[in-house]
Length: 374
Image 1 (spheres, rainbow, N blue to C red):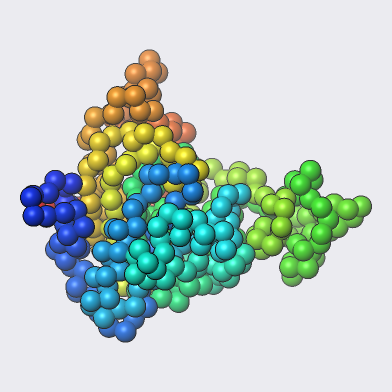
Image 2 (spheres, one colour):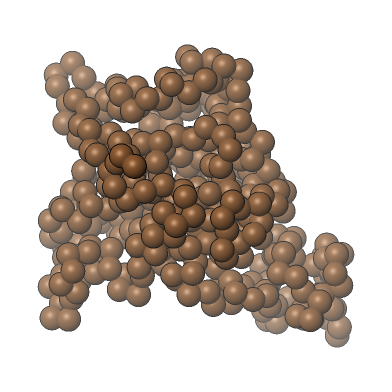
């Protein structure tokens, strides 16, 4: 099997050029126009950023992708799924407000923004995973699965659990509904935070298995009845129902790869990653630290695994930025000597587990040929 082609453009421009034009040239060189977009719904999956965080991708990049799709006859929309944790993106109303605040609105991007798993994060589809080892049916946001074509537009950065957030993280964890995210994070069942529970019974009314039991003004979950669907998490008005987050990071990464497979299998998919503002942790936080390495550039490929490997290699080839968490970690006497910047910042992670599992299930390959675009 020949190596997958990954296309790369640096962040330098000439006097009559700009980075948005360069992104479009990158997409064209990578074969974007080989996809038949005519009259097809196109989901552009990205992260809109938690308000307060300033490392997320600028909406102008999304506009370039969506305008290109429209010129080719497609019907694009921006999308993401609700978050599992408490924040400003846990339901569609707050999620849309956050997206609009950060510039992902029709006036800026030229397209609609749709929260793929619905108002409370419970609108999903059970998608069989071809070759799935940990997940037989992935719970993917319905609007994302309803699209004819998927484009991932990813801000490549570090991540405190996955090692880094690349195309697989954007599509896999990001494409999962709230129940899907619970499945990736959790090996067991949700539980009730008793100090937050008000005994309203909404979880009991939502559950099809009678697992939540309201007694003496508080709810508990009967694990013998609970199937782990996570729908109670979405309907709880007080965020009193949570997961244990007890799944090992390596297994979580394998599940992310399988969820990614569910999103992209059996339909055209194209992947773009921007290795800029490489923050040490996820854009899900309401703040961001300074970047750990200098800006590298823009990458594109039809192979999400090869793309993630190319981006990781590019980051690991960069020197740490002075004063960053990476520089502090590298200066520590017990710092890893493996030249893995992600392991240095988050030593309990292993990003390679997602890559290796992605190869195993046929999602992509690690071998890549880097093609530079001017």
